[in-house]
Image 1 (spheres, rainbow, N blue to C red):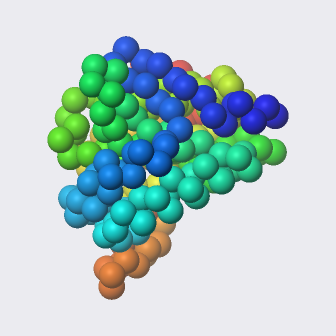
Image 2: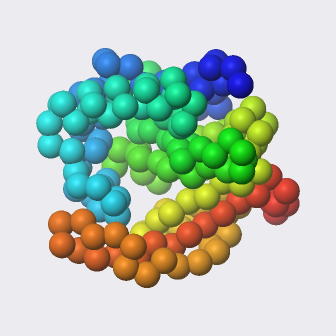
Length: 184
């Protein structure tokens, strides 16, 4: 598989999805140090610029090894980094991956997840040849559940007491979308 498939630039009406660069580190830190953004994540909030730099380095390594696709979500109108979207846990043989998003709070409620999500999903299905894309969220994260359902995902199950972060135990709701699913 071509390495270029893991370094795409995906354009939508309002957004550009492309690999993160070191100059994004401060913006990433601002987004992922926000406790509200990280409220339902299975990792703690970021606390230093090094967290962002490490994430960018790890993301580049994952894409180089063709194990994940980690893209910044940039606003076309301003060039601002609004967040990130990912296809990770990529399994080439099984033709599946997990999807994830993180968006700065000031960008919530503007339809960016739907726009970026559908573009990333279509890239996964058409360019990477995926058959299935999964998502795992905290079942209390109603906004993410609504976004996934809007993107055509179906809730497929619940994994009880899946995570413990800072002493808080939480479940995981599992969602899936198949390339063969018909969207209404």
